[in-house]
Amino acid sequence: MPVTKPAFTVGIEEEYLVVDRETRDLMKSPPEGMWDGLKEILGEKVGPEFLKAQIEVGTQVANRLDEAMEDLGSMRTALDGVVAEYGGALIASSTHPSAEWWSQETTDHDRYRELASDLQQVARRLVICGMHVHVGIEDPDLRIDMMNQVKYFLPHILALSTSSPFWTGRNTGLKCYRLSVFQSLPRTGIPEEFSSWREYERHVDILVGAGIIEDPTKLWWDIRPSHRYPTLEMRISDMATRLQDGITIAAFYLCLLHMMYRMRLNNHRWRMYSPALISENVWRAQRYGHEGSMIDFGRGELVPFADLIEELIEMTSEDAEALGVSRHMEHARKIVVEGTSADRQLAAYEAAIATGADHGEALQAVVDHLIVDTLHGL
Image 1 (cartoon, rainbow, N blue to C red):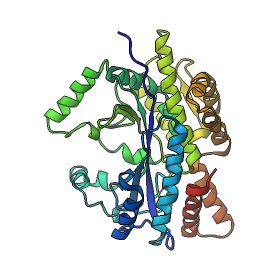
Image 2: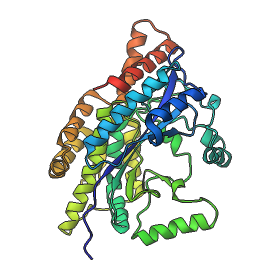
Image 3: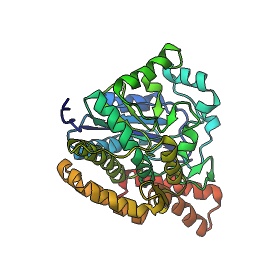
Protein backbone atom coordinates (compact mmCIF):
# COMPACT_ATOMS: atom_id res chain seq x y z
CA MET A 1 0.00 0.00 0.00
CA PRO A 2 1.46 3.41 -0.99
CA VAL A 3 2.54 5.71 1.83
CA THR A 4 1.86 9.43 1.63
CA LYS A 5 5.01 11.52 1.66
CA PRO A 6 5.78 12.72 5.20
CA ALA A 7 5.49 16.41 5.99
CA PHE A 8 9.13 16.51 7.20
CA THR A 9 8.23 19.35 9.54
CA VAL A 10 10.76 20.12 12.28
CA GLY A 11 10.53 20.91 15.96
CA ILE A 12 13.57 21.33 18.22
CA GLU A 13 13.79 21.13 22.00
CA GLU A 14 16.81 22.55 23.80
CA GLU A 15 17.80 22.34 27.46
CA TYR A 16 19.97 24.99 29.09
CA LEU A 17 21.72 25.44 32.41
CA VAL A 18 21.45 28.66 34.43
CA VAL A 19 24.66 29.79 36.13
CA ASP A 20 25.36 32.51 38.65
CA ARG A 21 27.40 35.17 36.85
CA GLU A 22 29.46 35.92 39.94
CA THR A 23 30.35 32.42 41.15
CA ARG A 24 29.88 30.62 37.79
CA ASP A 25 28.20 27.80 39.72
CA LEU A 26 24.76 26.52 38.83
CA MET A 27 21.93 28.63 40.16
CA LYS A 28 20.51 25.85 42.35
CA SER A 29 17.26 27.58 43.25
CA PRO A 30 16.38 30.49 40.93
CA PRO A 31 13.93 33.03 42.34
CA GLU A 32 10.25 32.69 41.43
CA GLY A 33 10.36 36.05 39.70
CA MET A 34 12.70 34.64 37.10
CA TRP A 35 10.22 32.00 36.05
CA ASP A 36 7.43 34.56 35.99
CA GLY A 37 9.54 36.64 33.61
CA LEU A 38 10.35 33.66 31.39
CA LYS A 39 6.70 32.67 31.11
CA GLU A 40 5.67 36.24 30.40
CA ILE A 41 8.02 36.44 27.42
CA LEU A 42 7.85 32.91 25.98
CA GLY A 43 4.63 31.44 27.35
CA GLU A 44 4.19 27.72 26.69
CA LYS A 45 7.44 27.54 24.68
CA VAL A 46 9.48 27.52 27.91
CA GLY A 47 9.25 25.17 30.86
CA PRO A 48 11.16 23.65 33.77
CA GLU A 49 13.25 20.50 33.65
CA PHE A 50 14.27 17.92 36.24
CA LEU A 51 16.56 20.35 38.07
CA LYS A 52 15.72 23.89 39.16
CA ALA A 53 18.89 25.08 37.40
CA GLN A 54 17.59 23.86 34.03
CA ILE A 55 15.35 25.49 31.42
CA GLU A 56 13.76 23.72 28.47
CA VAL A 57 12.40 25.39 25.35
CA GLY A 58 10.65 24.04 22.30
CA THR A 59 10.20 25.67 18.92
CA GLN A 60 6.94 25.93 17.10
CA VAL A 61 6.38 23.33 14.37
CA ALA A 62 8.42 24.59 11.42
CA ASN A 63 7.96 23.81 7.75
CA ARG A 64 11.53 24.94 7.09
CA LEU A 65 14.58 24.43 9.27
CA ASP A 66 15.49 28.13 8.99
CA GLU A 67 12.23 28.94 10.79
CA ALA A 68 13.29 26.77 13.73
CA MET A 69 16.71 28.45 13.72
CA GLU A 70 15.15 31.91 13.93
CA ASP A 71 12.85 30.72 16.70
CA LEU A 72 15.70 29.27 18.76
CA GLY A 73 17.91 32.30 18.23
CA SER A 74 15.26 34.69 19.51
CA MET A 75 14.46 32.43 22.46
CA ARG A 76 18.11 32.18 23.55
CA THR A 77 18.40 35.96 23.51
CA ALA A 78 15.12 36.44 25.38
CA LEU A 79 15.95 33.81 28.00
CA ASP A 80 19.38 35.26 28.69
CA GLY A 81 17.88 38.73 29.06
CA VAL A 82 15.50 37.51 31.76
CA VAL A 83 17.99 35.42 33.75
CA ALA A 84 20.49 38.30 33.62
CA GLU A 85 18.04 40.40 35.63
CA TYR A 86 18.52 37.90 38.47
CA GLY A 87 22.30 37.68 38.24
CA GLY A 88 22.26 34.62 36.03
CA ALA A 89 23.49 33.59 32.61
CA LEU A 90 22.52 30.90 30.15
CA ILE A 91 24.87 28.15 28.99
CA ALA A 92 24.02 25.64 26.27
CA SER A 93 26.13 22.69 27.33
CA SER A 94 25.33 19.09 28.22
CA THR A 95 27.26 19.33 31.49
CA HIS A 96 28.53 22.09 33.73
CA PRO A 97 32.33 21.96 34.19
CA SER A 98 32.28 21.76 37.98
CA ALA A 99 28.69 21.29 39.23
CA GLU A 100 28.23 18.83 42.09
CA TRP A 101 25.21 16.68 41.27
CA TRP A 102 24.60 15.80 44.93
CA SER A 103 23.92 19.41 45.88
CA GLN A 104 21.35 20.25 43.18
CA GLU A 105 17.63 20.80 43.85
CA THR A 106 14.88 18.93 41.98
CA THR A 107 12.01 20.89 40.43
CA ASP A 108 8.84 20.70 42.53
CA HIS A 109 6.64 18.84 40.04
CA ASP A 110 4.81 15.50 40.34
CA ARG A 111 6.61 13.92 37.38
CA TYR A 112 10.05 14.87 38.67
CA ARG A 113 9.28 13.84 42.25
CA GLU A 114 8.13 10.44 40.99
CA LEU A 115 11.25 10.13 38.86
CA ALA A 116 13.50 10.92 41.81
CA SER A 117 11.61 8.48 44.04
CA ASP A 118 11.68 5.67 41.48
CA LEU A 119 15.27 6.01 40.28
CA GLN A 120 16.91 7.33 43.46
CA GLN A 121 20.59 8.27 43.06
CA VAL A 122 20.54 7.35 39.38
CA ALA A 123 18.09 10.22 38.83
CA ARG A 124 19.87 12.61 41.20
CA ARG A 125 22.97 12.45 38.97
CA LEU A 126 21.06 13.87 35.98
CA VAL A 127 22.81 17.24 35.86
CA ILE A 128 22.81 16.93 32.08
CA CYS A 129 21.14 18.61 29.11
CA GLY A 130 20.37 17.50 25.57
CA MET A 131 18.86 18.60 22.30
CA HIS A 132 15.93 16.69 20.80
CA VAL A 133 14.84 17.00 17.17
CA HIS A 134 11.33 16.02 16.04
CA VAL A 135 10.62 15.33 12.37
CA GLY A 136 7.02 15.00 11.20
CA ILE A 137 6.26 11.52 9.85
CA GLU A 138 2.52 10.99 10.00
CA ASP A 139 2.26 7.31 9.04
CA PRO A 140 3.03 5.24 12.19
CA ASP A 141 4.41 2.20 10.35
CA LEU A 142 6.67 4.44 8.26
CA ARG A 143 7.79 6.12 11.50
CA ILE A 144 8.90 2.74 12.88
CA ASP A 145 10.59 1.76 9.61
CA MET A 146 12.49 5.06 9.58
CA MET A 147 13.54 4.56 13.20
CA ASN A 148 14.90 1.12 12.40
CA GLN A 149 17.04 2.47 9.57
CA VAL A 150 18.24 5.88 10.76
CA LYS A 151 19.58 4.60 14.08
CA TYR A 152 22.67 3.47 12.13
CA PHE A 153 23.63 7.16 11.90
CA LEU A 154 23.02 8.17 15.52
CA PRO A 155 26.73 7.84 16.42
CA HIS A 156 27.61 10.24 13.59
CA ILE A 157 25.11 12.78 14.92
CA LEU A 158 26.50 12.44 18.44
CA ALA A 159 30.08 13.02 17.27
CA LEU A 160 29.05 16.35 15.71
CA SER A 161 27.38 17.53 18.92
CA THR A 162 29.70 16.71 21.84
CA SER A 163 29.66 19.27 24.66
CA SER A 164 30.23 17.35 27.90
CA PRO A 165 33.95 16.73 28.51
CA PHE A 166 33.90 17.77 32.19
CA TRP A 167 32.06 16.20 35.13
CA THR A 168 32.19 17.40 38.76
CA GLY A 169 35.35 19.39 38.10
CA ARG A 170 37.27 16.69 36.26
CA ASN A 171 38.30 16.22 32.66
CA THR A 172 36.64 12.86 31.96
CA GLY A 173 38.76 12.06 28.91
CA LEU A 174 35.51 11.72 26.95
CA LYS A 175 34.06 14.25 24.52
CA CYS A 176 30.56 13.23 25.64
CA TYR A 177 30.23 12.19 29.27
CA ARG A 178 26.50 12.95 29.29
CA LEU A 179 25.55 9.57 27.86
CA SER A 180 27.59 7.77 30.52
CA VAL A 181 25.32 9.43 33.08
CA PHE A 182 22.09 9.09 31.13
CA GLN A 183 22.54 5.44 30.21
CA SER A 184 22.49 4.46 33.87
CA LEU A 185 18.72 4.91 33.55
CA PRO A 186 16.58 2.00 32.35
CA ARG A 187 15.14 1.97 28.82
CA THR A 188 17.92 4.03 27.25
CA GLY A 189 20.34 3.51 24.36
CA ILE A 190 19.75 2.17 20.86
CA PRO A 191 16.29 0.58 20.51
CA GLU A 192 15.79 -2.85 19.06
CA GLU A 193 14.27 -3.36 15.61
CA PHE A 194 10.46 -3.42 15.43
CA SER A 195 8.68 -4.99 12.46
CA SER A 196 5.68 -2.65 12.64
CA TRP A 197 3.88 -0.02 14.66
CA ARG A 198 1.74 -2.78 16.16
CA GLU A 199 4.81 -4.63 17.43
CA TYR A 200 6.06 -1.42 19.00
CA GLU A 201 2.64 -0.93 20.63
CA ARG A 202 2.77 -4.47 22.06
CA HIS A 203 6.16 -3.66 23.57
CA VAL A 204 4.71 -0.54 25.20
CA ASP A 205 1.53 -2.35 26.33
CA ILE A 206 3.54 -4.98 28.21
CA LEU A 207 5.46 -2.34 30.16
CA VAL A 208 2.36 -0.25 30.86
CA GLY A 209 0.29 -3.32 31.79
CA ALA A 210 2.93 -4.47 34.25
CA GLY A 211 2.99 -1.05 35.88
CA ILE A 212 6.60 -0.36 34.87
CA ILE A 213 5.77 2.86 32.99
CA GLU A 214 2.66 5.02 32.69
CA ASP A 215 3.17 5.83 29.01
CA PRO A 216 5.86 5.77 26.28
CA THR A 217 7.43 9.04 27.47
CA LYS A 218 9.39 6.84 29.89
CA LEU A 219 11.08 5.08 26.98
CA TRP A 220 14.26 7.17 26.95
CA TRP A 221 15.85 5.64 23.88
CA ASP A 222 18.29 7.60 21.71
CA ILE A 223 15.52 7.73 19.12
CA ARG A 224 11.83 7.06 19.61
CA PRO A 225 8.37 7.71 18.19
CA SER A 226 7.01 10.69 20.07
CA HIS A 227 4.06 9.92 22.31
CA ARG A 228 2.62 13.42 21.96
CA TYR A 229 3.19 14.21 18.29
CA PRO A 230 3.25 12.32 14.93
CA THR A 231 7.04 12.67 14.86
CA LEU A 232 10.22 10.63 15.12
CA GLU A 233 12.29 12.14 17.92
CA MET A 234 16.11 12.07 17.83
CA ARG A 235 17.48 12.24 21.38
CA ILE A 236 21.13 11.13 21.23
CA SER A 237 22.58 14.59 20.62
CA ASP A 238 24.51 16.54 23.22
CA MET A 239 23.34 20.11 23.68
CA ALA A 240 25.04 22.13 20.93
CA THR A 241 26.51 25.30 22.43
CA ARG A 242 26.51 27.22 19.14
CA LEU A 243 23.16 27.68 17.49
CA GLN A 244 24.52 26.99 14.01
CA ASP A 245 26.07 23.70 15.16
CA GLY A 246 22.72 22.58 16.54
CA ILE A 247 20.92 23.47 13.33
CA THR A 248 23.49 21.49 11.33
CA ILE A 249 22.82 18.46 13.53
CA ALA A 250 19.09 18.87 12.93
CA ALA A 251 19.75 19.22 9.19
CA PHE A 252 21.70 15.96 9.13
CA TYR A 253 18.89 14.11 10.86
CA LEU A 254 16.27 15.63 8.58
CA CYS A 255 18.24 14.84 5.42
CA LEU A 256 18.89 11.25 6.45
CA LEU A 257 15.17 10.65 6.95
CA HIS A 258 14.38 12.31 3.63
CA MET A 259 17.02 10.13 1.94
CA MET A 260 15.47 7.00 3.39
CA TYR A 261 12.04 7.96 2.13
CA ARG A 262 13.57 8.61 -1.30
CA MET A 263 15.24 5.19 -1.19
CA ARG A 264 11.90 3.62 -0.32
CA LEU A 265 10.35 5.04 -3.47
CA ASN A 266 12.99 3.11 -5.42
CA ASN A 267 12.40 -0.08 -3.38
CA HIS A 268 15.70 0.35 -1.52
CA ARG A 269 16.45 0.62 2.17
CA TRP A 270 19.42 1.03 4.50
CA ARG A 271 20.90 -2.23 5.70
CA MET A 272 20.10 -3.12 9.31
CA TYR A 273 22.70 -3.77 11.99
CA SER A 274 22.24 -4.88 15.57
CA PRO A 275 21.95 -2.33 18.40
CA ALA A 276 25.09 -3.90 19.89
CA LEU A 277 27.13 -3.05 16.78
CA ILE A 278 25.74 0.46 16.51
CA SER A 279 26.50 0.96 20.21
CA GLU A 280 30.17 0.33 19.45
CA ASN A 281 30.13 3.44 17.26
CA VAL A 282 28.18 5.35 19.90
CA TRP A 283 31.00 4.63 22.34
CA ARG A 284 33.60 5.81 19.82
CA ALA A 285 31.64 9.05 19.39
CA GLN A 286 31.48 9.50 23.17
CA ARG A 287 35.17 8.88 23.62
CA TYR A 288 36.77 10.56 20.62
CA GLY A 289 34.10 12.82 19.10
CA HIS A 290 34.84 14.14 15.61
CA GLU A 291 38.57 13.40 15.95
CA GLY A 292 38.13 9.65 15.98
CA SER A 293 37.02 6.94 13.60
CA MET A 294 33.97 4.71 13.34
CA ILE A 295 33.29 1.22 12.08
CA ASP A 296 31.99 1.17 8.54
CA PHE A 297 30.04 -2.06 8.82
CA GLY A 298 29.85 -2.52 5.05
CA ARG A 299 33.64 -2.35 4.71
CA GLY A 300 34.29 -4.02 8.03
CA GLU A 301 36.93 -1.47 9.04
CA LEU A 302 37.49 1.76 10.93
CA VAL A 303 37.11 4.93 8.85
CA PRO A 304 38.08 8.47 9.98
CA PHE A 305 35.00 10.43 11.01
CA ALA A 306 35.95 13.29 8.69
CA ASP A 307 35.75 10.90 5.72
CA LEU A 308 32.38 9.59 6.84
CA ILE A 309 30.98 13.12 7.07
CA GLU A 310 32.14 13.86 3.52
CA GLU A 311 30.37 10.72 2.35
CA LEU A 312 27.17 11.71 4.15
CA ILE A 313 27.20 15.24 2.74
CA GLU A 314 27.54 13.81 -0.76
CA MET A 315 24.99 11.06 -0.15
CA THR A 316 22.32 13.50 1.03
CA SER A 317 23.09 16.43 -1.29
CA GLU A 318 19.89 15.87 -3.27
CA ASP A 319 17.86 15.79 -0.06
CA ALA A 320 19.58 18.88 1.36
CA GLU A 321 18.74 20.83 -1.78
CA ALA A 322 15.11 19.68 -1.72
CA LEU A 323 14.79 20.69 1.93
CA GLY A 324 16.67 23.98 1.56
CA VAL A 325 19.37 23.06 4.10
CA SER A 326 22.50 22.73 1.95
CA ARG A 327 24.34 25.54 3.75
CA HIS A 328 23.64 23.92 7.11
CA MET A 329 25.00 20.59 5.88
CA GLU A 330 28.13 22.33 4.59
CA HIS A 331 28.70 23.74 8.08
CA ALA A 332 29.52 20.20 9.25
CA ARG A 333 32.89 20.58 7.55
CA LYS A 334 33.63 23.56 9.81
CA ILE A 335 32.72 21.49 12.88
CA VAL A 336 35.10 18.74 11.77
CA VAL A 337 37.95 21.23 11.21
CA GLU A 338 37.41 23.53 14.21
CA GLY A 339 35.89 21.10 16.69
CA THR A 340 32.75 20.90 18.79
CA SER A 341 31.91 22.64 22.04
CA ALA A 342 33.76 19.88 23.91
CA ASP A 343 36.96 20.78 22.08
CA ARG A 344 36.50 24.49 22.71
CA GLN A 345 35.84 23.89 26.41
CA LEU A 346 39.01 21.84 26.75
CA ALA A 347 40.96 24.53 24.89
CA ALA A 348 39.56 27.25 27.17
CA TYR A 349 40.66 25.26 30.21
CA GLU A 350 44.19 24.70 28.86
CA ALA A 351 44.51 28.36 27.82
CA ALA A 352 43.61 29.47 31.36
CA ILE A 353 46.12 27.06 32.90
CA ALA A 354 48.79 28.34 30.52
CA THR A 355 48.27 31.89 31.78
CA GLY A 356 48.73 30.88 35.41
CA ALA A 357 45.19 30.01 36.52
CA ASP A 358 44.73 27.23 39.04
CA HIS A 359 42.33 24.34 38.41
CA GLY A 360 39.26 26.08 39.87
CA GLU A 361 39.95 29.32 38.03
CA ALA A 362 40.41 27.42 34.78
CA LEU A 363 37.02 25.75 35.21
CA GLN A 364 35.49 29.18 35.77
CA ALA A 365 37.12 30.30 32.53
CA VAL A 366 35.33 27.43 30.78
CA VAL A 367 32.01 28.71 32.12
CA ASP A 368 32.84 32.22 30.93
CA HIS A 369 33.63 30.80 27.51
CA LEU A 370 30.30 28.91 27.43
CA ILE A 371 28.32 32.03 28.35
CA VAL A 372 29.75 33.89 25.36
CA ASP A 373 29.66 30.91 22.97
CA THR A 374 25.99 30.20 23.76
CA LEU A 375 24.84 33.61 22.50
CA HIS A 376 27.58 34.69 20.10
CA GLY A 377 29.36 31.57 18.84
CA LEU A 378 29.49 31.24 15.05
